[in-house]
Length: 172
Image (cartoon, rainbow, N blue to C red; front, side, top):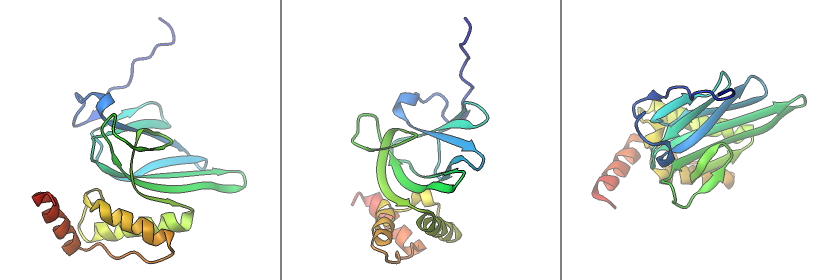
């Protein structure tokens, strides 16, 4: 049969998990033209499609940051950062290109100055020894709202993180 190519093998911890139960993110990297990358998040597996494209698969509830950038001969035409939670199939969600079926948006910023500011906040969280994928969803919503209002977001501290983890543990 001509034209049929076997899918590349998956890479990661849970290759046995059916893809239809996972959120799929397609990443594209065409140097200086279209660049999509994950800033943080723990995917269950990866599938390489070709030298410029790959798929990442996230379980329901996983938080990840997707950065999308594009340019043409006149300069940057898109700078966007979305922090979202993967959803279970059939759950209500918001859609974004390259994410199937979509996600629960915690933060969305457009324009390089705001994208850069969020990347700095992510760096600060990591410098505090906290995995950004484990941060309280409410904090990412807070950052989104403060940036949308032109205000400075509060710092996410280890004390905030401990409180979030304890609150999650007791189910509050």
